[in-house]
Amino acid sequence: MEAHLYFHLCDSIASARTAAELASTERLVRVTDMHSIERHALERAIRSRADALRLAGDIAVQRAAPERAD
Image 1 (cartoon, rainbow, N blue to C red):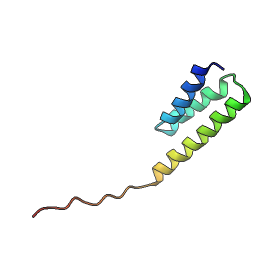
Image 2 (tube, rainbow, N blue to C red; image 1 turned 135 degrees about the vertical axis):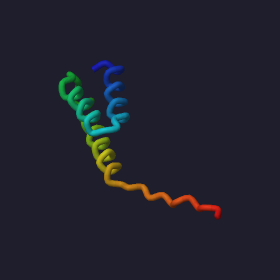
Image 3 (tube, rainbow, N blue to C red; image 1 turned 30 degrees about the vertical axis):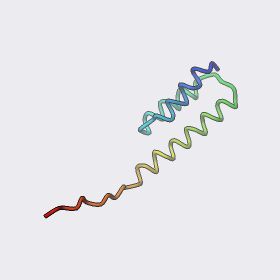
């Protein structure tokens, strides 16, 4: 696989903001011809990003209300 394509896929995985974006990139990885080591590395990155997106959806950030100066 050409380096620019590999790094484009890496960047696409890292910048995915939704599960749909990640699924689209995963389809590209599936149909692209590459060495097995490259494929395993990209699949590992996809799993990690999917976990991160899932966790981000489960976490509710609690912020303290601003103090009022009455």
